[in-house]
Length: 472
Image 1 (cartoon, helix red, strand yellow):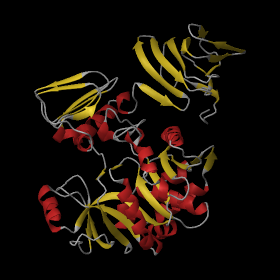
Image 2 (cartoon, rainbow, N blue to C red):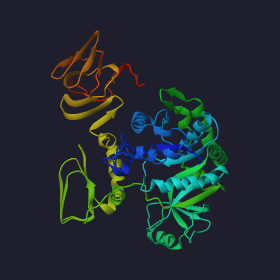
Image 3 (cartoon, rainbow, N blue to C red):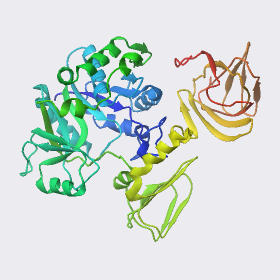
Image 4 (tube, rainbow, N blue to C red):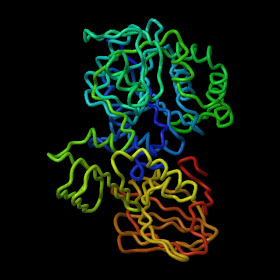
């Protein structure tokens, strides 16, 4: 069986699933359709046909999330390429292709968005195997989803001929089509020769670079410069910021697939969903007899076709077609037919410079997390969790002092020239300006309460002197 090299695209921000998905913790890192996160599911569904660990292209701010989540499903030594700025899929895939060829050979790249649901992974693996021969011969294969409804939220691919007999052949691509209106989408469904554009591809690394170089040599030149000047940072490869930022932003569809003469489409039935909205997540969720679905403690009385995601008890009474999402710091209530407008909420939050667009109340860091429990004039209270063996940077603050009270575990504290351990119910004071570090020398999670006091409590009031995560 031909093996492929998986490329996981993990640079999205997931704004349409706000408030659960946020810029600093987008949907690919969330467990939305099962116990595993979407990134983990993307890898595990192709691990059996993959030649070695995946190549991951991720936002620099998400590097530790990606590495840790893959480690949890047994992935070691993944090649994680860090985008200093977002430049869409064409440059991201070019960087992955350069990485694959730098490792030796010219593998088949299976390019996958890391935030889709595939309900029939066995059928998808079979489809990839069927597509390998065409890709080895130089085709750029995309996987077209056989539509079962006149969906207006997807782009379409028109094949050069239909497969009315139900065959599973690979066809040439006649054209790619933008999202249609409802009448046009219905005509595509009636015709039978049109497929949803899944955004998944299979091709040789060299073939993609050649076709991209033919139509967008400026992108290839910029990405090659960024790759050649990249810096190795532990498990990560940091693409050069200036060179990568010089690349035009373009999708693989516009840059290559709509122009190349080598595009082919393999129609598939794999129970696919791009989970591009809350209504799409409702589609792939288990529903009760009244069509209600969700996550958490939910009571529904005389309510139908609604979706709830909550931490606390939520009761629906006499409502239909609603989406209700409750997090620690935000609540979304929307009609199921209007959830695409959630991105307008996020845009408004960003315009107002509100942190709710980017951060959850609990913020994840490579060493653990912190939860902002309370904040007021001149003070802030956080609950801090530090993973076993992890340590924060050696740092100081210009505007605030801190008081640490250990709740669980053992804390090793560095305070200027002193180093000492604290256990539950013990505390330490960190004066303004003191060089300090917090670490967990134990085998269990360290939890503590931090009380900050000062005239400015922003997260940017940190001077780092040493940092094992490359942030100093």
